[in-house]
Each structure stands twice: as C-alpha cells, then as structure tokens.
Length: 225
Image 1: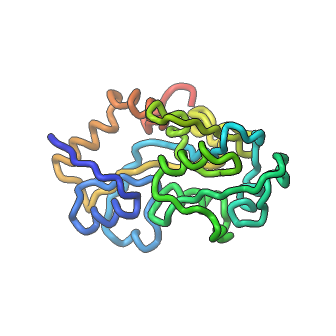
Image 2: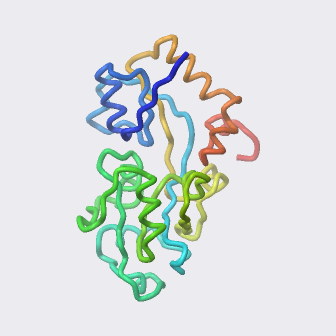
C-alpha cells in the first residue's frame, strides 16, 4: 500500500474528502456546523494538548485562561500587565484553515474576537520559528512540536492555570487547552483506507504517536490514565 500525504490544514483535508479527492482527512478539530451534513465518518486517533509558547528569554511562566483571552483579544498588550517585563506583546496567530486555531478559539476566546493586529501564519513551523526569534512574541502550537528534534531554534511552553502541558495532564483533563485528533472518511472507509486506519490505531503505532508528542486513543482503556 502506498500513502500520499499532503498537509494543507484541517479544513482543506475535510473539503478534499467530501469532494472525493482524498480518501482520508486528518484533522486537529471536530466537524463544524457546516460540515455535519457532509456524510463523513469520524474516527478519533489521538489526544493532543495545545501548548502556549513564548521565547526562552521571556520570564513569564504561567498565564490564566482569562489572561490568554485578553492577550489574544488585544486587551492586554504589554508583558508587564501579566507579571513580565515592560515589553510589547507580539501576537502570533494561525490562519482560519487551521484546526489548532479553531480549537484555541473554542476553548480560550469564549466568543471574543481575535486581535486583527496579530501576525497570521499558516503552519506550526512558522509559528515556532517566529516565537523563537522574537523576545516579546506569544503563539500556540500542538504540544508535540514544542521540543522538535528537527528545529534549530528553541521555544518554551508556559503553564496555563498553573498546569503544565504534558501527556499526564492532557489525559487526565487537568490541562485546559486540549483536543482530539481525527481521521474523517466519506461514508464508510474503503478496504484500503480501513487497513491504514487500523494500522494507525494498532498498538504497534503507539510508540510513534507518543514520539510525535500525542496520546494514543488506546490509552483510554489503559493503565493509570
């Protein structure tokens, strides 16, 4: 079996499957109201935490959900307002096709609009890179990409509501910014697609899913979680 992968964002994947141009969509969010009637089958494959990242030189260690909302709404604009140094906050956001943005918006913003002055970037790597090079920047990325062995630069994840993002805190529900990751197929998956899905959900893949920084759904029935 050969698998062709294209990473264009959750919304693009869902659109491709619904248009029959892809067999499986990978998504970091569930279906929105407009997508509920597309006849898609939902398959949870892993759990993930969304880490709030800052530059390693930023002394702030923790933000509350309310502080994050105020920062991303543009109401708090200087790090000194949240216990940091006197430095303008440089907001980094994701584009509207991003499932990570959709999850962050749903969990954190509570109906408040994002600040339009934020830099809007299309990929996790871009967010990570900008934050790593900009002392006053703040962004959010999937927890598994905070410490990437492929990246040349460093970022630091902060606690949210005094809870660090980790496999344990995401699995327990203690970390406030977490979500499920999904496969979607149009109707029932084809035999080939089903074989691939079963492989990804097998115990054989658990270590690779963990290595990527995610939590396998097989953990749900597992030890100590």
